[in-house]
Each structure stands twice: as structure tokens, then as C-alpha cells.
Image 1 (cartoon, helix red, strand yellow):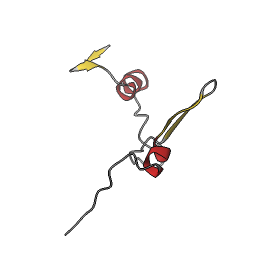
Image 2 (cartoon, rainbow, N blue to C red):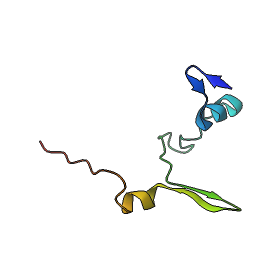
Image 3 (cartoon, one colour):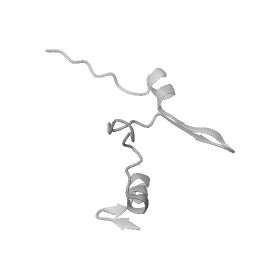
Length: 64
């Protein structure tokens, strides 16, 4: 499945199949952020919160 500029991402494929956006909360309609993916066999395969805690992201300073 190719999108406009290459292969479709999971979110786009899911929306095409189900008609629902997996990253929008079904209760309040807000867009959600993905922090962790757990696999039954391999355990945690994506953990953004640990990356943030480990300082792997640059901090943004707002100086006004």
C-alpha cells in the first residue's frame, strides 16, 4: 500500500481499514501521544518516556 509519498504508516492503514483514527481518544476526541509499545513475546519494544528521562531529547527552552 503506497500513500501519496511512499508506504503508508500504521496510523493511515488503520484509518483506511476501520474508519477510525487509532491516535484519537474515543472519549474526548483529543489526539494521543504514543509512549510505550509492549509485545507479548518480546516485551517493551518502544519506550519514549525512558528516552525522555535518559535525556535523549533536546530540551526546548522558551525565552521570551
